[in-house]
Length: 450
Ligand SMILES: [Zn+2]
Image (cartoon, rainbow, N blue to C red; front, side, top):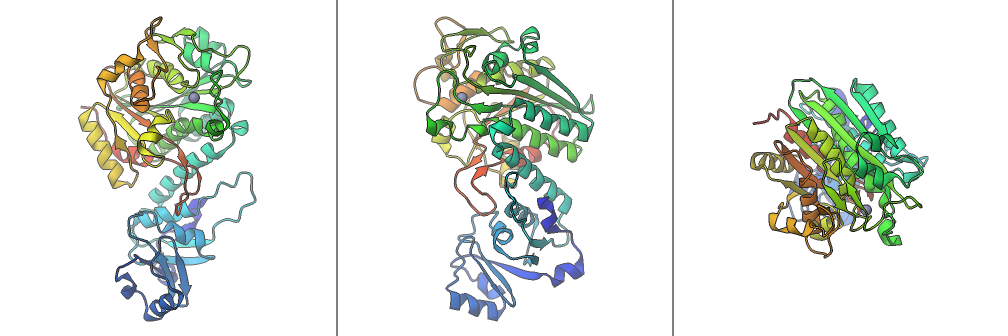
């Protein structure tokens, strides 16, 4: 448990821990450290470079660079030897960062656990910090787990574990039942895989509470289907269930914090594989909603499985629906891997979410559901095309496709996440990453529909 490296406040233990001083470059922060440490910094040429750590008998200096990284304290957990530490002027964000620094994906390794413990200062809600860090670690673990061990069946097991631990109800529609129960798009995308496709439906909370539905894309491996990806494009495709991992991680937090919500999580869990019965470019499939969809490209499968899950969710008239999906490469072309696009036509909720994102250091960027582009979703043979030609505005057009299946009288927010860290930073190793769920948690706290 990464939470173990955060020690709840006890005065004696806190005061006895080794002090860590966070030092920005080109600042006079060093003046707050003991003179002997400042002298040691000079001898070693330590100037506060981001993530640099220098330890001496009087304590530790931790470089914060220009001070712009809210999670720089993670470097302490990553680099310091075993022992108790305290950070001068610490707050909850430092504590959270320390736990991020203790994260290891060790399912397949005999990794050495982090041994540098942070003594939390008085006044920090240590349990809340641990919950959020554990949820981030959980999302990362699910995304990092190879597709061979995180297929549709394994995703179902994760959801069942969450249900067992929380008293949530769970229902799963699998394989041929997807056809008889009218989830044709989910079946079409997943039917070629050895492990059967399924729709996972978890429900928790007070029946009369505000109805919030999370829909997470659970493509456990995306070969691209018959429109097969090249090696570079396929290399990371174990992460294409990132939306499902995010939905489960967020649900876990909502449940642990006992939000007064009627929460539902819908996860279409499929592997987009290739076999003789794979769906094909040019096929026309009638969706659960009744709209027919021409398959322009079998690699635009996420929006297909989400469409049926969203339609099903909308039938229960939620007041808020959130979709989380590793949906488009175009989102990364627009904003890069660390800033997920967020779509929402409801101004109050969008403002609430953006404020929550800033407050939690969990950034998102609002992009437009630009109506004129919806015309490009047309098809000459069907109501919609899942992958119209052209390379412009791919993330916007994917969001506009989903909008056709969103509930009409509800707030809908959509996150086109990457779920992966491409470049390491303190507390954020290369690999699976949770994006936007802490912002969503803050936005959903005490949320009520208008
Ligand atoms: Zn795809």
